[in-house]
Image (cartoon, rainbow over all chains, first blue to last red; front, side, top):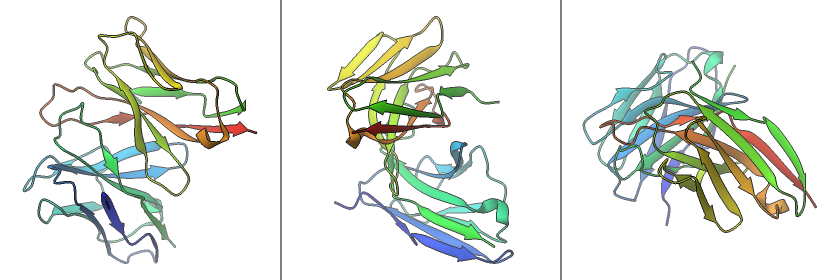
Length: 114
Length: 114
């Protein structure tokens, strides 16, 4: 009964390093999302994938890329990490990308960039 | 432009008391209003949601009140318990869009003292 699994749970990077955050869901959901959570800022959408084969920018896409590898997996890549990208990253999924679909979240990746 | 404004930022309530969190939105196209609950170290989880065709929805000790004319909605937690201590996020979306985006408030940290 895993739901949404994110790896790694914690990571420390140096400025300029690259990294890929992994996300997989086992609920056969069509839509997947990446958010970042910063203190006092709530959850902000980085990118989303309404269905396999499609990706779209969210509110804060700069500095990130995504890949919808298959229906289960949606990865987030930081090509050249910057201290401003220190955050907690959450992956989520929903059955469809309609607005009234509940989103199921993973437990997050805590990323620090020095 | 922040489309969903949430208050207060933090709230301390005694066990057995009523916790009230308020949200206001600007986009009149929003027609789905969920609340998410997040415990430390975990991802947010859907708690309760409402559509604007009703003014109130109750699930156990949790109630959403909705005022369409004022563009406001609120979460009431009756008989608050220490186990309710968490961060609560209101959100809003347009369920009619083909690719929807869920807009979150900035969150309220609720502490229920025993």
